[in-house]
Image (cartoon, rainbow, N blue to C red; front, side, top):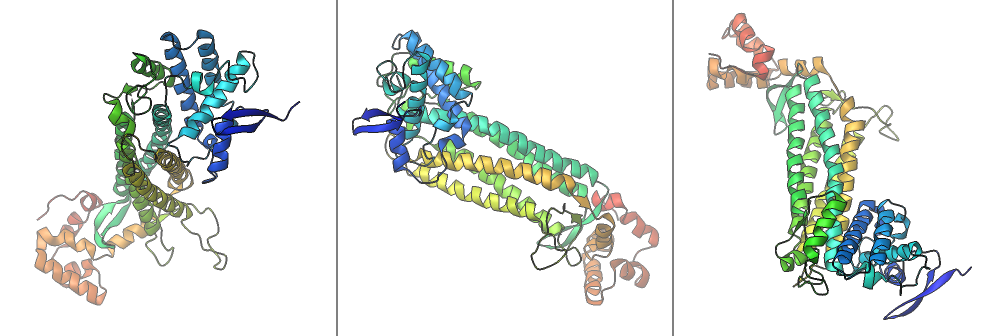
Length: 468
């Protein structure tokens, strides 16, 4: 058996491994774009989406009479097998490449063409029977096929991300319920402020993250608009009348998404605003998540010389030199993930701005940035929930003692004693180390024990009623 087959393009002839389903243009991309070392197969949802696009195009072209039925049927079968993940190992082009995604599109065209050839009883490379460009890419350009597949893949990837983010929010909410009776000191500017319930603190984390779920859905709606049928720049060159609407309907059915054909195909072919919006949503969530992790690290600091109001699960020794030290490693890794996503947002911003005239050729780096950001955020949220949040415990007695011995509780006395008198109590407490209770009740007699007890009940500390 031969170990290779010859294929040609207008640049010349090259030997392709005989068992490879990809062809000469994929081979050239492998030689030209050794950038990330991360191949297209690392994003199987993108591979699946490319198969969806090619199948929808084949069905529309057959229906409109521009593609023979037997070839269209073989292409559709090949697409189904590619979408199943059976041929992911044939999608090898680097995620970042020149050519506005042409190499990705041709990787898909070649794999599907050679698989269709086998289905039809021919050999790989016998393109006179099913050609990557003439048949699989019929009525398409990279400039509509690539972004459409990208948007479909993004939409499906966001579903998984939303689920994991929602589960993390629910985990924080559950801790909020668990800690509802834990009294603690609230802090502003890292200084003691006023008392609160630890349950409220954790419920706020949950609310903070739940807000992001609706922003994700807004972004999914934006990326549901596609430009199939635009071909090169929006004119629809080489696509039959009615193709754009028909292929969109087929693609909606195949993908399970409510896709919408753009009203202005010229604008839709070069516009990347939806990606900027989505990237901004990812950045916003990353910022929030990082802030929450900062709080978890502070609240668990110590254990003897920090705040130490909560305990994070001990996962690994924290030092190669300090025995017994345990670090908040999960919040730390989530912080670092957030930093990456925030940086990737700038990449998307610059790539979107870098488009010129009728096409933005920077879409491959946008796809890389968004795919990796969604993947990393998904992993970070899952890790934070499973390895940290569900195992958090409260140091209830310690947290309450911090409140009872704090100066911050003097604020509760403002309505009763007035700001000036309360300030004097705070000043003396700071100077002498005495408690607010000792100064206000025992020494100065400004409050009776009964009044103190009325003001400083648990419920009144966390849900204060106005008391005079």
